[in-house]
Image 1 (cartoon, rainbow, N blue to C red):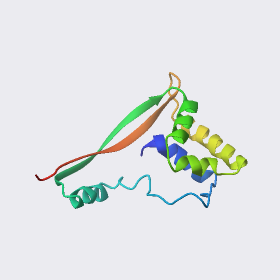
Image 2 (tube, rainbow, N blue to C red):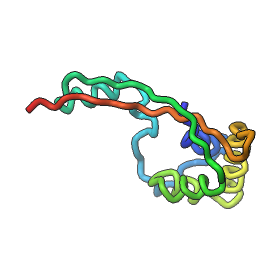
Image 3 (cartoon, rainbow, N blue to C red):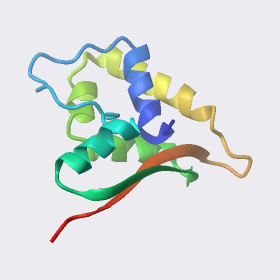
Image 4 (cartoon, rainbow, N blue to C red):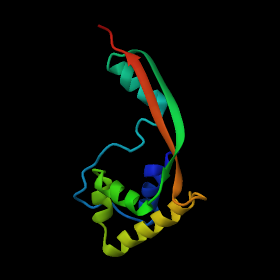
Length: 126
């Protein structure tokens, strides 16, 4: 439900990108999207009175080119996944990203991306 990373993940998948062989495995981006899994992590770490809730909002982005650059520069696994592709696949990923993100165009310019995050809390016994 969060399109900030979701648009890029969808673009990579739609373009048919295959992870380069030197890309180490890592956890899913959406590992803790399931509140039950997130709650189990916190209770397993010793927290009590754990609560997990979803917070949604829209994030306005003026410049989707800067967003593209930031996503590539700020992610450990997406950057080598995209940049490790043949040039033609990189171009397809970018074109698909642009098409998918344009679905969220704002009337005043830029885009308004739906964001969904988990907010969790708990008490650590003394």
